[in-house]
Image (cartoon, rainbow, N blue to C red; front, side, top):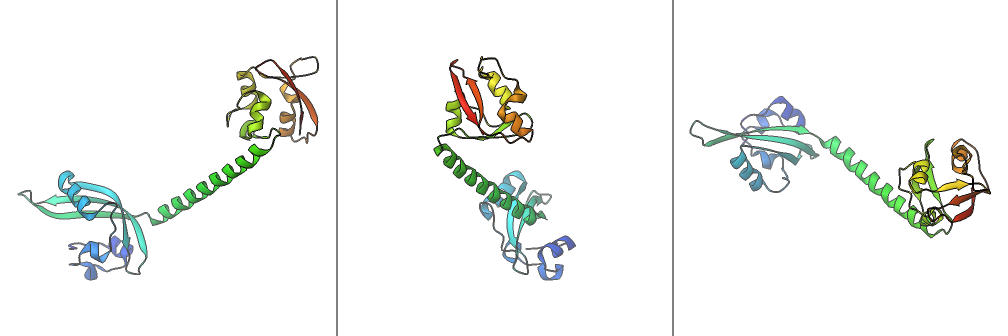
Length: 211
């Protein structure tokens, strides 16, 4: 039963101290526990304190999520006398986190769907960003073009060097990075039907057209 009810509790739950005193707190607030009330009480008896999240109901019927800290108070003989409960409203934070999780899940689903579509396309497709051309997305055909798998987040130049892949001209001289179609496009140029030759890890030469 409620023995003490401060102004913060009045503001959080909507009941005045006079209305709350003597009431069974978990009945008044319709408390929902993460496991069970018995489990929380057993933990308090054993450890003296408990921390966790509770879902409770305000006087106006609105549910609130609270971060709860509870401490078991004993008398001089060690007999449990009361429980001090400190609750902090984290409802807005939880709603925001749930919204962010839902958005993240939706984004992952869309990306998975996009990846499946791109993997069907026989031409090599990859998306990069930043001046160092870090990979964002690539389809299955891209690996067959390069002769190696380009990890997401790795800069293009680092990827090519790691796998001894070279972009060469007709005489098999290495082309400067600023002349690569990808780097030119990152500089703002629209590159269409640009012919490049890739010397892959197997040392085979593959001529390609880049857009």
